[in-house]
Image (cartoon, rainbow, N blue to C red; front, side):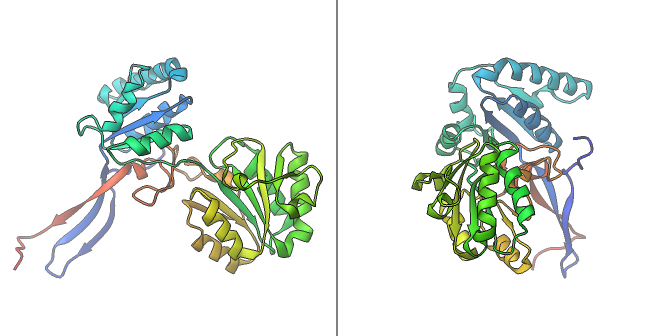
Amino acid sequence: MREIADPIGVVTESWQRPNGMVIERVRVPLGVIGVIFESRPNVAADAGVLCLKSGNAVILRGGSDSFRSCRAIHDALVQGLRQADLPEAAITLVPSRDRAAVGLLLSGLNGAVDVIVPRGGKSLVARVEAEARVPVFAHLEGVNHVYIDRAANLEMAKSIVLNAKMRRPGVCGAAETLLVDRAGASTALKPLVQMLIDAGCEVRGDDAVQQTDSRVKPATDEDWDTEYEDAIIAAKVVDGLDEAIAHIHNHGSHHTDAIVTEDEATARRFLDEVDSAIVLHNASTQFADGGEFGFGAEIGIATGRFHARGPVGAEQLTSFKYRVHGTGQTRP
């Protein structure tokens, strides 16, 4: 984290007006960030250092099953704050398992909290988005797609699909749906399906996919909208790029979607028209991670369209203000 540039005070734009005034747009902290998370105590460390690096204070509320681990991590963070002669309150841990603490954070603590970041399951994130009285950086789920275009390199497609699904099936960047262009399905579909099943992945497919291997299970309408977080993938044959984009629009979660193709024009259309926080060409969806983006760490992946989108690192935990330098100008 020390190697990550300090985002605070950075002038992102500067220009001079005809009257001689110089205007600068400069990054500033958001303020106090409330982070509500469940069973992963490493979030306490990631969120604590990211908020500190970006000049923010943070209030951490971990889950009851990780309470002791969070306490230990917080104690280590506080020791570091003391050694650096920084305010210990910059990283605060809610010292209670009481669920009422979540409601207090969501209320904004009488204006003391500026933004909430939830990290956890769908029920937690849904509650935060429904009850929060302050802005929220959140995503509900990662229903991510890999689209294999007719111009895809088969060996590359196999490598990307296997990694996107099976490297860590439970992370939010894991692929949940495989889409294959009908024009290339005769050569690509069967090898992809067999590879996944042989690797221990359950494949649930449409009629065309089921015909490639007797081990494929029939896909239901629900499968196209499901984040499995497991070694299960839904697979479908589509009629080209337009149908692939339409499927992602109708069933995706605006998180992370990838195309595998050697056709640059097709790739450009996919990257331009798929409305997700992260879109990739010839790369695994598992790169949806702040560390892989060079952010050092992340608090989460935001899928909304306002303020932060994608991995939320130190820079994304800042806002901006305008500094105006004059020489006595007055407005006529």
